[in-house]
Image (cartoon, rainbow, N blue to C red; front, side, top):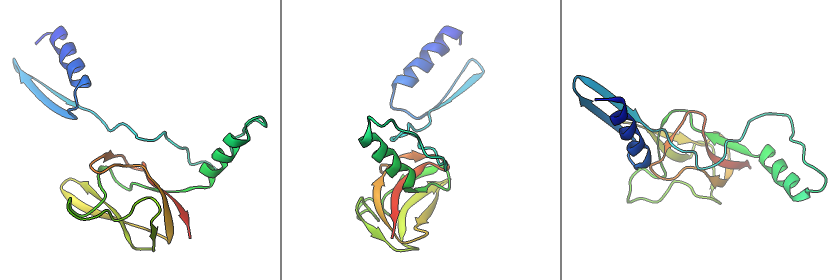
Length: 147
């Protein structure tokens, strides 16, 4: 296995839809893994307001809404599922109102199914993850407004 072969293998892997691959030849093994691509831009959780120019009032309103929004984030790295099984409806969707303790989704990690529950009464404004997506620790899953 030479460097040119490894480079081509990595390039092909990068272009493919495969997330993980193990390869062994000539006594050398290679393990390739891709992380999930965030569906939404990363939003910083800081307390200092962003400054917008006076000429852009619509942007200022949008920034202010994002700053005041609450997010329910993933407590673990795992696979996101909207429902407990493929043939049942999603626990929540955009516009749903949930009570504290109500299930929001399933996060699978190491073959363990973990139910993520709402910590407070809220309305689901936006769902950032799709069914089957790999999610990272502290990744925003839901944008909510407290009730």
